Image (cartoon, rainbow, N blue to C red; front, side):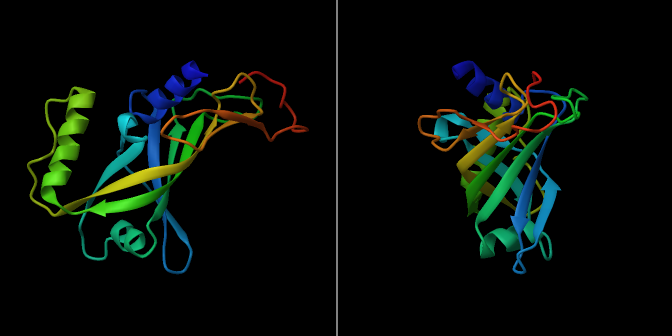
Length: 180
């Protein structure tokens, strides 16, 4: 299973081309809002996911997360590779509790860590706008397309010592016995 965990890490860690990430938050009317964001996953810190927000008048992410500090991150493969009989794509979602950080020193520490992990020569520390850091602390991960068969879904609920639990939720679905 460690190979599978490494595949999932590579997929959500920003190291695979053709994978995009989305953040979903909920407003005061319990309606979700989703938008594409850039992420950095700190696997050494219980898979904590970081993304930078920009303060703007009426910033929805900040407003939503201030009122309800829970979010879902969703990574989707857009490279054209498909799994199973119905052209599904590999995807991972993470339910998380969110902490908003406004301290510029902590934001810069995050950016430097991201730069070093990705071997980038720039970090975005220079800026002419106000920003904040959203740290998403995973409580549950669900991955599709990483098991041998199309029907298998992988779950991780412990991010201190990640272990995969396989769930078959597609019995009876056409093609559920096809390889992913």
